[in-house]
Structure formats: structure tokens, C-alpha cells
Length: 440
Image (tube, rainbow, N blue to C red; front, side, top):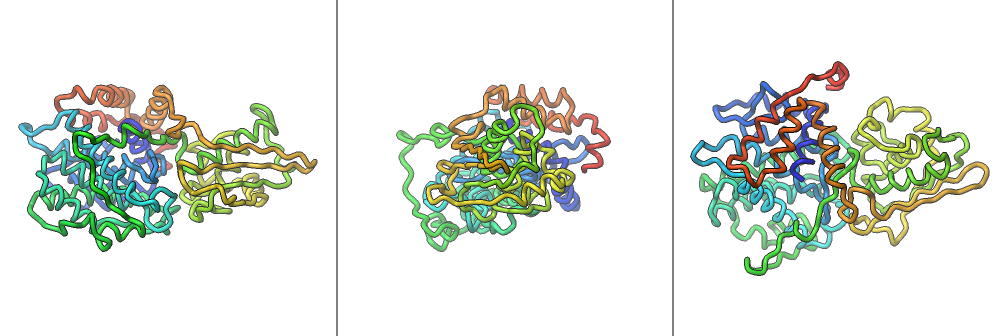
């Protein structure tokens, strides 16, 4: 999770939304500073380093996801990395300290979501990282800073007042700010708690507290430490192969399978011979976009990802460029696409499926259904493929030495006496091509 999140954050520094967040955050300065990932000559105050790095992580919707539905790593990792650089030499934290704080941040997010059945489905009202991510960031930061039990409770109370962002901004440049704000606000809540700021001590128990975010929120007492088990021991996360909403990975795999029936391998799709395309998808309105016009809308469009996979045989980073979105042949396919919402197809990352059917003008119909895509927790990426994804992403901004240094440091994190050494590799910027400069 840590390695993948660093990779998607590094390639995320090439995006327009990251550049806007960075431009804004440069107005802040302090004697204490933390690394901006992929920037060899730029540091920011810890709050704003965690903010811009969090924005980078989610800027392409490329970060990990789990069930109940949220992006667990991006909301906490930038905060911990920013903090690791700011501690004085006599208070440096080990890799084990880092891993424990990371796990605490993930655990708090997962436990809070398990107190709501509503949270198990694709969200309708609030974007989860802006809700539980802020709480997870506060918990991870508090643990990393060594706050006591009372201070940790206050940090969560303060963080709850920073939480919440509406789903209406999904598919826009604003959505990545949700992760950046979760990082920054969680860290800020921990800092306020350290200074003695107080909040409602029953924030997690009240309908008017954290319960405001979920209509069926039902908090329960946690088991004793003797019988406690971590959520990450029970469930893996989904690691994405291309940068889009998680639901898009089901429909892309189904569409690629249909394409092979029509064309065989490595042949052009006969677009003019297609009569219509039918997608059987869950009813989740914000990811059903018939004619997306921007990269962020395309990342949240079942129709776009299905048609792209049919046309190209894959969905990749390049699929979401303006040039590819506006292709006449793709637009022609989108105009032939209809969607159905079967009653058994629940908007739930554990249970949903996607089925793609293509009917040709000669009457032939080809259908494929994907129940579990490669990268889902039921069918996880191999370690080799995960590292391949990381290297491909990180090499867009870092030198090869920096990339390999990160892989080595993450793989031996539990043995590090000072976890902040990871930051030195995040600064080893490589040569940026003219193409990358134009994209920035």
C-alpha cells in the first residue's frame, strides 16, 4: 500500500490540479519544512506538504481502494512522511513506528466505516476520504507524535469538525482536494490536540457527532487488546492498474474480453459493424456519464472506460488525455452505448459485477461478465506487477536511483532506525522530457 501510494503520488505531481495546489501552498513558509514529492528544490510547512502530496496521490484517481468504500492510504501516508522530517534528532521515529502509525490510521478508517451499512456501498452523499480519511489522518498523526489517550481523543473530536465533502464534486478537479484536505486537517487536528485544544469527548457516539455523516451509524465498543485483530489482517486492498474510479476496472476487463471475441488479438475493432453496446452496471449515478468531456469525468464514466477498452484493448494513463477523449471513433461508440441496472447488481465493491454486450449489424452478439478484476482483493496484483506499476509511475519524475532507493527502503521499512531517510529518495528528481513539461 505504501509503495503503490508513493508511486501514484509521484506521477500525480505531473497533473494540472497538483500544480494549482502547489502554487497556492507556496504562499506559506516556516522554519520547519517537509519534502514535496518529486521536487528537489522545494519544501513546504508540514501541513501544506501533506496537503499537496495528498492532492497528488488522488489527482488521477489512481490510489488504492477497499471495502467499505474509501481510499485508505492516500489520506494518511503524506501526513506521516511530512511529520517524519520535522521531528528533532532525539525524537526520530523508526520504520516500525511508521508502520504502526500507518496501520492505526487505516484501522480507524475501517472501524468507523464498519459501523454503517450505508458505508459499504458506493457513496451517494459524502466522499469517504473526506470523512473517515480525516479521522484516520488524525489518528495516525497522533500515534506517530506519541500523544496520550486524552490527546488522541481530542484529536479525533477536532478532526470530525474538519470532515465531510459532497459527492457532487466527483469527476472534477476539486475531488483530489478531498484527500489533500484529509491529510492536512488530520495532521492539524493532532497538532491542536497536542496544544490542549478540546472537542466533544463523545464525538464518535453521537448522532450529531460523527453520526451526522451516515444515516445508519451505529458505533460499537471495540474488543479488548487480548482479542483484537487488525482489519488489514482480514482484508487486502484493491490496487488499480489504470487511473480511474474502481468500478471502471470491472467494466474494462469485461470489455477487453468481448473485444477478443470480435477481433482476436491485436486487430482493429470494426466500429461501423457495431450496432449497439449494452452495459449492465450497478446504479451509481456519479459514475454513469454518457458523454464525458474532461479527464476527470472520463475517469468516472462506465461508458467511456468500456468503449475505450473495446476500441484499444486496454485502458491506460494515456486513455484520459484530451486527444483520446475527443476521438471521433470513440464518440461514435459512445453514441451507440446504453446502460441497464439489473436489480441484483449492487453498488458495492464486494458484490458488483459488470457485463458488456456488443451486437453487430449481422445480428451476432458477444457478451462477457467480470465479477472480479485483476487487482481486486479477491484477485490481487502480484508483487512483481505492483512494483512494475510503481516503477512506471515514479520514473515519470524521479531518477532511477531515487526509484530503486524507495523500493529498497519500503521493503526494509520495519528494519529502519530512522524512517525519515525515505524522504531523501523522494527528492531525487530525474530528467523531465519536453512532453512531460508540456503536460505540466
